[in-house]
Length: 256
Image 1 (tube, rainbow, N blue to C red):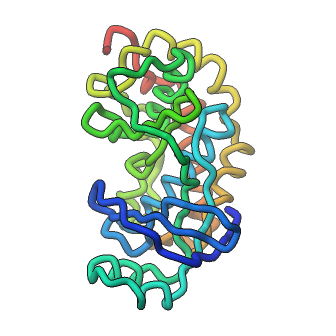
Image 2 (cartoon, rainbow, N blue to C red):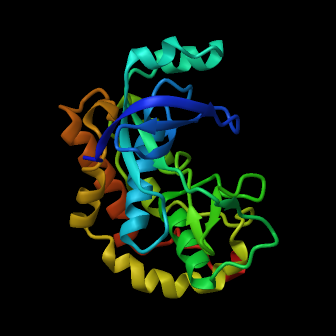
């Protein structure tokens, strides 16, 4: 599982988007962007953050280190903002901490990323069906002149359909990925070479290692599943079916 730290201080909210993440300090002396289990998007967003972020890291894509942040009820009692206090109270337990990158800045049209790094992120987004990497919301940082991918909660849309059971991966395996609105769409010509390099690395063993990082109490067990292990198996199965097939989902240059 992810390394676990305990929050020692809530520093400030980040009022971007609807989930109201916040900066926290922890007992390992680290500073993290904390994404809370009590936010409206639910636990599946945290699962997607871990699965895609950890997969990206193992494939050579810059993603911030992740930890599980244990939040005690006492943290919320001293927060003056009622909205934040309610969120902290609803988030007692394990939350997601994303390593804070001091001095980083948001990606914009003035940035000139390394083409291969950009193509790798575009490929990962296509594999995991990320619907939230547009110019309206790039979810990219530049830190030490390198491109870093953040905010993967909008990936893995398939798990939102599991309320009725762990449905089969066939549809996801072939679902095309639309790059027409992607912030890195200009780097589509490099995706074929990235696919040839990275797809063989996405093995069942690698996926099980990645999915194994998710804390068990974030895994919502749907009807028909016997426990968290079934849910982990489903994540592995869906992603493996997508990468091991004919990859009709892979965007082509003509789609740019």
